[in-house]
Image 1 (cartoon, rainbow, N blue to C red):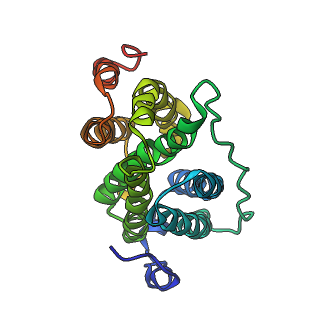
Image 2 (image 1 turned 180 degrees about the horizontal axis):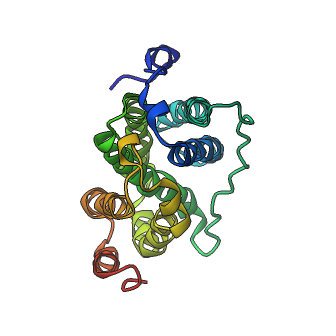
Length: 261
């Protein structure tokens, strides 16, 4: 899998005429979505930076640390690209994104040795895996050349961000007792991370313009829950984590938004 670069940006179809053909209200909606994404990408870059410091101090395979360094650079690149998309859709300059400093959960009720792994699980194994499947959906439904190309470019990077989480969880740096602790925290982590993805505010912000890569509310929910059921819970199971509670929670989510809470 190749890494995205500035040359990819130059090759993007910036003159995509379908942007101008989009009605003013929908064009503004898509533009504000990309503006929000630009800030969100900086937020994730900040979280990756903190995680890199923690794992360097507490222990991780060199390959995982390399993937983290690459992920930090990716997210800054993504933020810049999302900002350019916002300008293109809105039709005027907008303020440069200023991402808030991310605060990773401290997991103070968990054993100290398990806390870094729990941070990796939430940020990478869960959140970035959802992002990967969601971006795959966005790229698949997009008809307009510009958002389709951008989503494909982002997708190539998100695969690495999720992979670093699974690589760390499966590595010798994570002990059997820590994997057992991950199992105890798995449902709360899923509730928190998946809950953010399924929040009404995010669903409204991203939904309703499928030709430009933003799925409907139902499509958004299907992509998020599909990531959980087809990728995330099976991934934990392969890593030796107890997923029985996670499956019960997931089945409740499939029955309805409130059934598994």
